[in-house]
Length: 217
Length: 217
DNA sequence: TTCTGTATAATTGTATACAATTATACAATA
DNA sequence: TATTGTATAATTGTATACAATTATACAGAA
Image 1 (tube, rainbow over the protein chains, first blue to last red):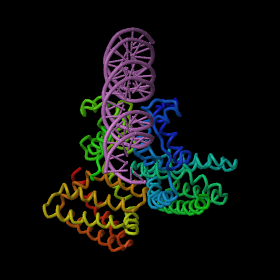
Image 2 (image 1 turned 45 degrees about the vertical axis):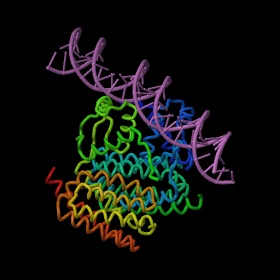
Image 3 (image 1 turned 120 degrees about the vertical axis):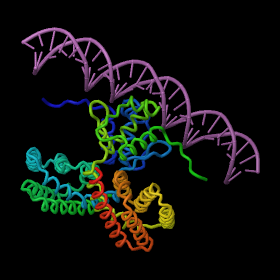
Image 4 (image 1 turned 30 degrees about the vertical axis):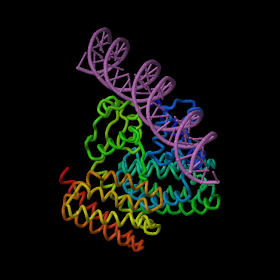
């Protein structure tokens, strides 16, 4: 049986605001007041407040005397996000390889096939989602909560700029090739190789993102 | 004039619970229900709930159907916390050196002197607090929010095990010496040296913590 | 003008009532 | 005994009233 779970309004509000802040719908500097969000989202203050406290904890907003100010992700932040990932994501790939389970193997293969499927269709939106799924799968397969919970927000916060990056066809092609190579390394138990490949992958992604985004911005 | 700021109950509850979970007052696996906390802390459910949502975001607790289950920090977590710090804290020291301000310089000198003061008095509790202050000062001096906000929780979560570690006199002595050397490097503008020294510092701290804590636990 | 005080409005902080959900105990049934 | 259904209790989810705080505008004094 499929697992059902009613998602609380507080969580829905959090996820919507998180997405909108990360993708820039709410620009840096904008003031979010509880009342405004209550009217805008049609829920009471309680779930709004809980969402705001969680966003604060993620450093996506900050209290500002009057309302919460949106911090969002700057280009300077992007550089740091990628530099940190560059330094620790190899570790995640290493552990994922060492702790690979049968289900993990299947999951990675499934993601790899889906990636091909969306690539054939030139479906950029879903390809970006596959990038999420691919990296999240690795984080989860590590079996190391600290590593996973450190990396997930770092990856998620790059979302806005990744979107811009994969509009570059060359980069998209390379990215998919790199994913495949990493996948192969993990599935064949080559932990050190997986680590090295993912570090290179992030380095290349960083380079492309920064170049393109500094032009756009 | 000194800056006053009334701290909300929600924040006080959060900080107390965070500390108690990290230091093990609430052991891993314990169930926290809102009602229990309301009675225990003498506040209403609203601030308790906000605190719980923030703790969830920090992955110190998790929902469990019935109440929130305490996750806390395991020894395996400790290893990962230190490995990650080992890989990125050098970057923080580098930026702190490059972006050093007059106030930053004063702050570091002040912390260094206070450290000597408490060392003379063999005041372990305050010495641990100086370790916090020293590392937080560096994180803040980077001027890089992502780096700071990634490192602060990683450092804070090691608290319980650091306490055990500095009961070892040799380790305490070395730790203080290492702090001094890092401080000197930053103050004299040697960014690469500061980076290298702090990486070694964390590596040594990690080694000691793990050895001692695996005995204790 | 610039500063200071004060009233007012805007906003957040807290408590609590009630609704909805979920777990639990226990009886009834196969 | 094992399983299912149902009532009950425990718990969380949400809305809202009221309190406290904070920002703002504006008048009056230096």
